[in-house]
Structure formats: structure tokens, C-alpha cells
Image (cartoon, rainbow, N blue to C red; front, side):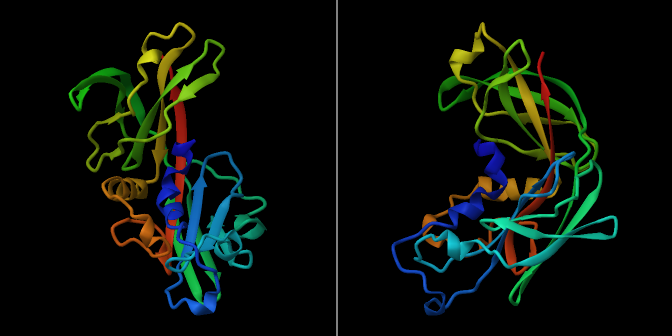
Length: 265
């Protein structure tokens, strides 16, 4: 689903281009490491992507972009869990299971390029209420889901609408996040979903509800920056100054914690 790759969509937009052969030595450009990692409670950290940016006007080539010989580790509780390459630039820790409320550190290096990042696995706040809200959008009446949330701290919140069958299976879910919010002073916040398809508003096969996605606080800054910017495909392979990544050093991307929960009336 698009929502599952939202935190890295800006990175992958960078990985497109025009038709030119890839010969690294022919392209004078600044290499940046590209990092993707979403950490979720109860799951093994086994999907950390490490790649590199492409030269301007170079055709995308996985063998060029994906790095198979980077070195790195995820640190938790003072223990270093070495990253091991699996395939296509994806690395695993082999044994580190994510826990809610904990902080994780990433360090990685490839040749002379190094990066680091820190994220905490958010403790969700309380969903006080949610329901359908009617809005005027471009002169038309549309319906969205809106939730009122009492945050635990300064974590970032997004929601999607979901249609759930009576047996508890999710039939459909929105493809996009359209709003992110967070509290800086402990006040309650509201978050809206994408527009609900009209055919689902009176569905007799399921109930409409929401899925709440709670990210580390860094996600809010990333979402606000990329959500308000049209990213041109012509600048792939170059770090975008107006997108706020949480990767420090010579890299771009996100290494970020997330939890989610379903709510059905």
C-alpha cells in the first residue's frame, strides 16, 4: 500500500532518470547514502535498506543503487546488533526485536561515507473519539474520518479510513496519508483521513473505522516538508534541501519507529 512506503516515497522519486549508461567514474556528483527503515513493536529488525544516490540523468540500475557491502549496526541497550546483508540492499540484525517505548540507534558506513540516526518507538496516546466528518472540497461535499487524540507525548499521528468485515478482516483501507499532527504542549489534537469513497458510506458488508498510525516525532517534520513540495523527477540522485530527513551525516532517508491500531465503532 502507498501508506506503507510514505516515509520513503521522496527517496524513491530520486531513483528515476533519463537513458544514459551507468559508469560511476564518468559522473562527477556527490554520493549520498540512502537509508530506509521502519521499526514496529514485536517485529524483527530485518528490513533496513542501504543504497546510494544516482548520478544526474542516469538510468536507474538496482545493481548500482543497492549496496551489498555496507557495514553497520543497530544499537539497543548498549548492545551492537550487526547488520547483515540479505539481498537487494536489505539488511537484517538477525535477532533484535523492537519494543515499544525503547530508543534505537543506527550507524552505517560504505567506503568513506557514514551516517547515523536515532528513533524511539512511540507509545500511543488515547483516541478520545472518531467519526465521519463532511467537508467542502473544491465545491463538492466529501466525507472523511476525523479522530480526536490525547497524545502520550510529542509523537506524530496520521490516520486512514478502513472498511472492516464482521469477521474482523479489513476489506479496504485508504492508500494515502493526507494529514499529520502532533502536540507540542500536551493539548489534544485532531487528525483527518483521505476522502472516503461514496460507495462505502452506506456499505452493508462492513463497518467504517480508522487505523491510527503513530510515528516518532521526526515524521511530522518530514511529512510537512514533503507534503507541501512538488518533487521534480529531474533532480533524482540529489539530496533535497527542503525535505527534512532524520538521517545525520552523508545520507538521506528515514530510520523511524511506528505503531498502529484499528478502531471500529
